[in-house]
Length: 311
Image (tube, rainbow, N blue to C red):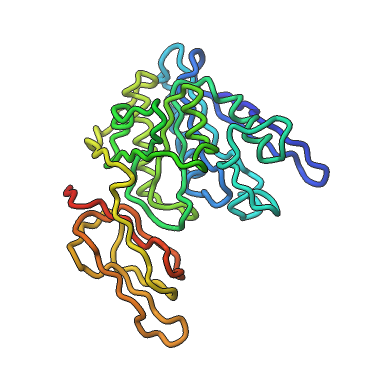
């Protein structure tokens, strides 16, 4: 294992901001794995730390295949992690909306440009990502429909679902989109949690990446074969919205099968405690995403449901 400095930004009043990666093997730039781009992505940071630990053991055993290089970047935004903020600085700028970046631009743009320059030549790019809304997912692989996406490759992670989504204008500034534009086969992996550790989904995510690296001939690793993934389109998911604001009491969890009109959650009056709304399933299917914060606003997405898909 070799530690490599990928980007450094000087600071007048505190230590330099350093983005570093851990390199395993030598030769062809086979795979790059990126963790926390946002300051609250603690689960993503943790998963990368476990991959560093596992890949170090595999390298010591000679299980990194010849002429293959793997790079793991646990955190692209360590400053925000240290300050406990999701986004960068007083402007709350999202680094994952700053790609491909500009070496002469503002701070987040320079970070994005500096990191992308270091990782643009890898054949496969894997990012542990988080959603823009607070909630929990069924573990899945997500790809943008850029013309370079490959659902058949995404299936090799062995996770339950592969989601293909059409990019919106704001998505053109993400790492995933710009990786694909650099001819890297890029995948975003989502697990159950973001701002807290979930050991079960972390083990599953770590295993999925090692399974993929094995199937692509980059490492030698004995693993469970995983799932035969269901490929679904993001627009085919049914969104369930909150009709009012208040305290949020969830009754179901991601991965559960629900029937039409089954109670999914309750929204309570914040002062008097009575039920303002009982959220009912508009269709039968499997819960793909569930809101998790104890407060909710009117119009927020509470659940996303895979319609009539049985496990």
